[in-house]
Length: 299
Image 1 (spheres, rainbow, N blue to C red):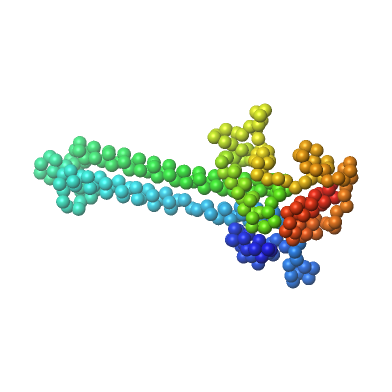
Image 2: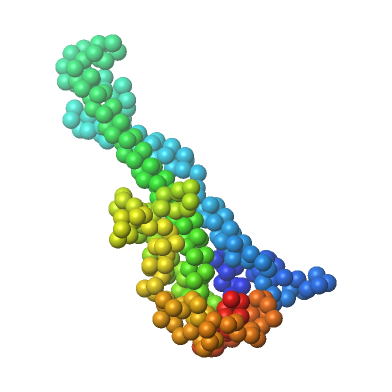
């Protein structure tokens, strides 16, 4: 199970599983082997690695704009040169000013004109203005497409940061998840996709959820925080591990029979021992009971 978990995270974060194991687990006292004990702050480390992975996906957009502009310029020129040849019956593969000069000569049936007279001819001016207008429109369309692309990349980067914070909030509430690590990750990621339907603004005190251009508000007209939004949404998807008696007054969970709030002795010496036993247990009911015992003993 541990190898499957490491392989899944390795593929997700694009990190070698052996290297990932060194990041996740503490080394033995002699430093030669890895223990089953997780390093401190491992969740924050995984979140940081995921943010770094997303940041590497953001491309250099300048070549897209340059290539698009050149392509638009070429397509506009070819379009009008073809139209001029067909309209005036010009067989020669002339282009640019030479083609316009030939068109003017065809339309006036006059002897060949010098460049200055051609460029002042009404037909030349009309065609030149039309070509410039089409080129400008193509450029504006290219700029709009580039801006839309940039906006999409920036929104996805911002959403990834929001989802990383939301993941911490959700896991801090101790949702009841599958005993399989891969299924656990899929359950969490499926829930986090709910946030894609919102926009978020970075504020001094965190993220401000937005929807349809307006901030999300509660029944009293106050802005909803990211933590409140995650709580409201996650209540629709998850059950949560039983808390101690003091924490159960308002959530409907059984108090656990600790009689008036006195701490229950924990079968685990410390948090590391609890986490090791928790992840080894495959029975969800036993996991919930283990979490309850540890929570009650920790106060």
